[in-house]
Image 1 (cartoon, rainbow, N blue to C red):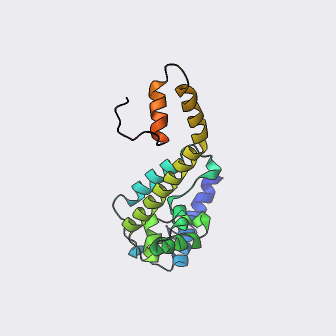
Image 2: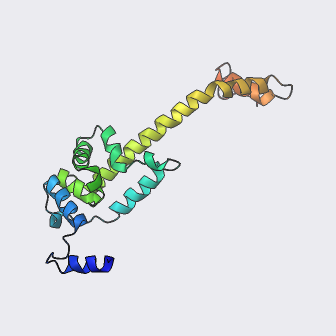
Image 3: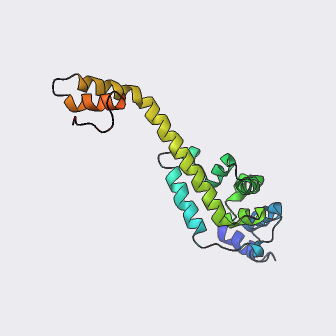
Length: 175
């Protein structure tokens, strides 16, 4: 029965390349207002986006997956915002049908610039996250250091404590 329906579809006069997926892809390109033949593949762009996506989603649940273009929403770069606007203007179920270069082309922005913007945002997020973790852990670390410095064998910890508290200069004869 399934084979008969496939033959029926092939023989129905519908040309190849006009299935539901191709139809949705054409609608997505039309939504962006660009011609698919104008979109040029950019060397390593997709591969770099895949790597970034893999890195930023490590340890996340499937329903929490983030696309690198999501980072563009946090950008102050006007070109990054243009690409984000193009990306989010296409319905979510259609986005995956287009190459990432299509969104860059629709926004008139170089894919290499988009990678730079995404990476700068990722670096900023990483630095903010690290600073937050260090700030949260700092009181416990200081308590541990003080407890160790108060031990009879805590001479090095006491010297470190005094240097950090700026009671001793960074360079002094006490080791």
